[in-house]
Amino acid sequence: MTRQETDVINAPAFVRRFLPAASGLPLGPLLTLSLRSLARRRPELFERLGEYRRARYLIDPVDLSFAFTVVPDGISAVVHVITGCRAVHSDVVVRGPIMALLGILDGTFDGDALFFDRTISIAGRTEAVVALRNAIEDAELRPSDLLCLRGLAARFADGVILGGLDFVRGVASNGVPRRQERA
Image (cartoon, rainbow, N blue to C red; front, side):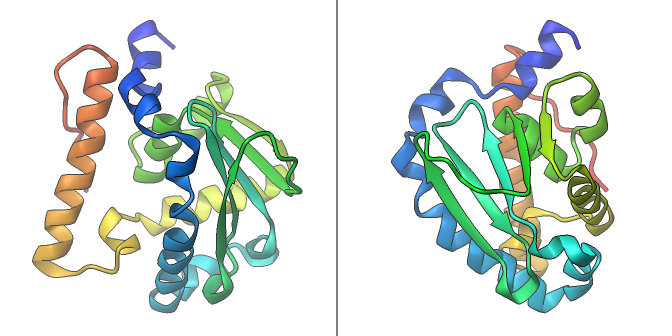
């Protein structure tokens, strides 16, 4: 991976300073509600995980001061924010820069390529990560799906959120933000 490609997946310094550990705390309940709502609307996404829907995934954005545990158990899904060096039981640990992790989620980056390039690391039950990756890729999720929006509001939210991510990636690479074509 080139220096410019690496810069695009590392959060810019201003983002890291802007998000102290405590800023992640409200995200747990919000993300829990979001996942549960998504499970009510699209239960097949969670069913696709099979036995791994009850697995505990530790998602650790290494350039932020907090991490997440996620149990994607459909309408019983739960997300917790973990701060500090607290030891947490998990079946799977996924670590990497926040922009890389978000890029996998929004389809900008190929998770396999980031793994083989050692930009992200995976430990624990790798079959659970494969199941999660397959479910995410097949779902073709957009921010509006997680926010329960439709129509004009959905298009607006997708544009603002995805545009914001593109902008941050552009700032990180010291280049002009480029919008990737999304289906």
